[in-house]
Image 1: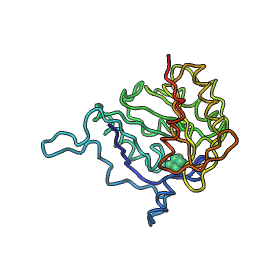
Image 2 (image 1 turned 120 degrees about the vertical axis):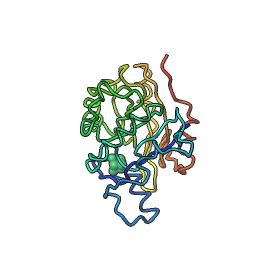
Image 3 (image 1 turned 30 degrees about the vertical axis):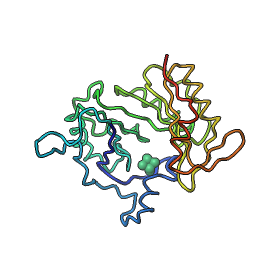
Image 4 (image 1 turned 90 degrees about the horizontal axis):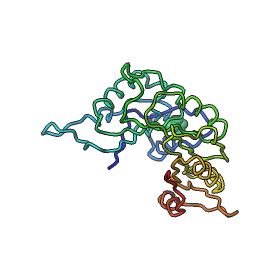
Length: 242
Ligand code: SF4
């Protein structure tokens, strides 16, 4: 079972992958009056610890919580709130919290004193979109005390060489194209290349979604949002370690 949890909303664009940010696109689509760059705490801040009348938690144990997908968990504006979010994550040690971030270099800001080698129920996905951001973020990421680490190549904007970073500290690499009307092209050869790097290093690989403009065998496909995940799955190129 999966759930989303957005303790805050809004973000600042910091790198090429942010150009057509999903959060900005969604806010525009729904005509949100507050600018997307204004980060604010949401009414769902304490969602994981909300209880039913019988005092049991509303979210069932074992649920995978996609955390902070309408912002970046490590965004500067949320430094104070993050302390409270970590407390919630600790209280719900029976849930798994999956956090994607483009700000892995801010990992230590507001980290709980008892973090130690990492909470067992936290997976952190270091998001990279090109070689430049991979070579900046992944070395930082690899040094951090985090129990479960993944690399998320999204939106994949060019061919990326990850070979120097692929060892058994990385639990999975995922690749995705960009969605939205202005999406940049995702070349299937870039996806296959990352997959091959993972196979050589025996690291699980997942092709998560094609994106809206998908180049395969020299032909550009325009893929509707609702088919982007299923089309990637149809490629059948996910890899599990052996
Ligand atoms: S870091 Fe993520 S949420 Fe923030 S602007 Fe960039 S893509 Fe959007």
